[in-house]
Every structure is written in structure tokens, then in C-alpha cells.
Length: 178
Image (cartoon, rainbow, N blue to C red; front, side, top):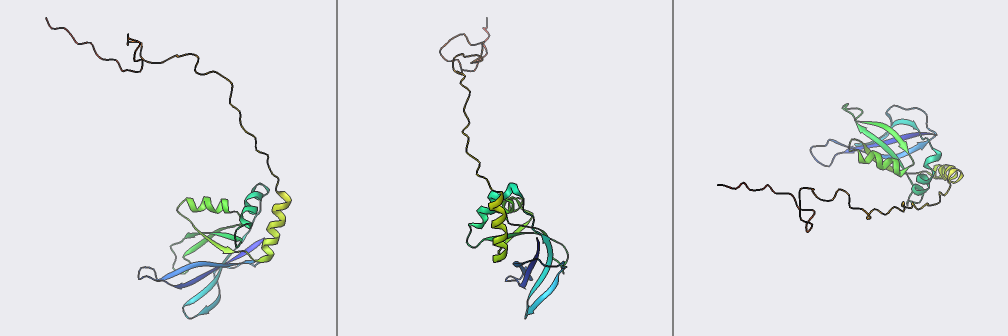
């Protein structure tokens, strides 16, 4: 499903940042756009920055269900800073998976913004996730029944003659002076 990404530009709160950018909403089923101005009120402007496909994968059904339990359910928008003044952010990806969004947040190069999902999008993702989710039963891994403490191969140093401390490091014999 194509999702339009709306970014809000407002004046920065410090003297070092002229503008503050934030993802404000998504537009399900939006047409292609390239930083189209949607509205402007004073110094605050909203742009339809890009339209990207929201792809759902069967293997991520559990992640989608987990994301739908959040209050409110959110779409995650992955942004990367750009050097251009008129387009300071590149929209890389939109995803409904909080696990995938966390992966992008961990790399330190990308910005991850979350915006509330529209209700029609919630129903579409929920139906997909419930159709493709299956509960995988937990299988406890069993250890091999090998007795590892039966032999003491390789313990200590063969140059140590006494049996009292097999973990002691060897010392050099002192030469006798005549």
C-alpha cells in the first residue's frame, strides 16, 4: 500500500538549529509526491515529502501484532539527513514493524519517527497479521548426556612435579653458584 509521508517544519528552539523537522502523519493510498507543500501557517509548514510502499511480510506477522498492541498503534518512518537546504531529510522507509524500526534506530545514522496509524490502516495490518501469524511452540533444547568431569586431561603443566597445586605456574630452577 502506498503511504505518503507528511513532515512538519517549524522554527528551531535554539540558535544552532534554524528549523525543526518532525514526521506528523501518513496518507494511505497517496499519489507520488516530491516535497509538495500541503499547508503553511506563519512559520510552520507541512510537506508531503514522499510516497513509499508499505510492504507487509508473512515472517513479520508477530512483529505487526506486537506493534498493534501499542497505544496508539504507530507507523515508523525512517529518515536520513541530507545536505540540501530545501530537502534536509530523505525518507528511506515506512514500516509497521517495531522490530525493524528498532534495527534502524540502533545504527545511529538514521532518524526513526513514529506517527499514529489511521484506523483503516490498523484494520488492514491487523487482518494481514492474523491471517499469517502462527504460534510457534517452544522447544527446550536438551544437553548431551556426556560426563565431562570424568577425565582431567590437560590440567596443569607437566613440568610441575608436586600434585598439590596443578594450576600453579612453573618456576625456573635457580642455578647454584659454586
